Image (cartoon, rainbow, N blue to C red; front, side):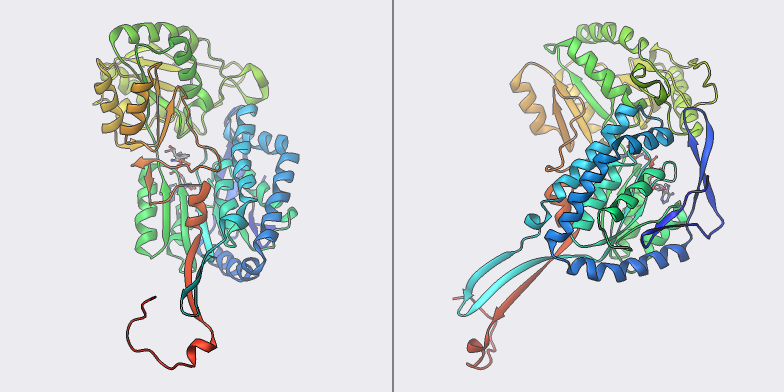
Length: 498
Ligand code: NAD
């Protein structure tokens, strides 16, 4: 099957002659080919988006919000269809795929309130006969570049706020799983979005570079790995664009001696191995405080990890997590596991020989649990993005918080404790953007904002919530005086409001 781009309200075939394979990660088969756009295809899509944006921005905000309202209904109507397509290309379980769509949908629900978010400010009689007001205006054409691991949620996080603010958007989804973004574009049209306002341009580095250099595009929102986030941030900002880039993660969960260890072990299971560990908010490092806590935690984790059910999404509720996204991802995870063993970590659950009968060509990776990991090891330094949980033992709370503080990433973190004082101290001092207290994956809801610190985020505004409305608009402030004030003649000194 040959996939397309979505341009001016229609599926359009690629003309560059370049394609990438889209796999079914459960079987290892190529299920589609996605076109990789050229610079010329991107530039043409942007030119049409710029034309369409003028009329879209001129619609009153409530009309634009009604498109979001219709989109909410349509996504709910097609929830199962979207989740199935998502599981088929990404590999995550059907329930998890629905969660992916749902967390994106919640941002569209939030965007129904866009008219409220877009209200400006007004000062009546700021001076004699003078009014002053600020408007929040759309930027024009903006771009979203998104990763493979949330092919519904993250495109929706970008589209909802950008479009409801009156922008046109070029969406460049991951070339690994582009079908759901294309389906979402179809739903936008059905919801009443004018043609050209959302263009889905598929591709790889070539089209990304064309986006970064295109002079019409005013802002770039990126989510993906840290090296690419840094590259996109520096090239976009050098080209004068507004830019927010969210990168990789190494999320630590601290387990205090007073924590409920059954609860902590269950939390680690979901947060470490859910979606095969391919979540930017996955917990990849467990930090038990004290050897006794560590020994008890490992004893509780081992049988749980060994009992994890790995399989294709088609097996339904019988599966805890599915395959990873590509053969290359699988190879990289297993390579890192080998470095862990070689560098002296204790592999207490060894998933290296995992094999799923009937799915030998699928990209399945068995669950791995490491103990005695130290900060100089590759498995600690690098984002593994697979079903591998590392345990770093700390003697004290200070040592434990230090690991999370010193790590180059700062996306998410969690503490498990029954002590409010420790939890408060942790939440206040930690230099990480999203913090859980007895909550392992603290993903903020749509009306709050989502963003990491340190090498997990570049730019100064977060995703969704009120920040998104700041990111996708710019402020214009008007000072006006009507004719009676002008009669008095010119003023030559700087105006001062008396
Ligand atoms: P990736 O960086 O490989 O790709 C992300 C996007 O960048 C894709 O659209 C891809 O086509 C494009 N891209 C890839 N290489 C490029 C290059 N050399 N030049 C220009 N563009 C390029 O990331 P991924 O593998 O799709 O996603 C996984 C990563 O995303 C993980 O590191 C994960 O932690 C991170 N992530 C972060 C967040 C967050 O909010 N911080 C959320 C989800 C995923």
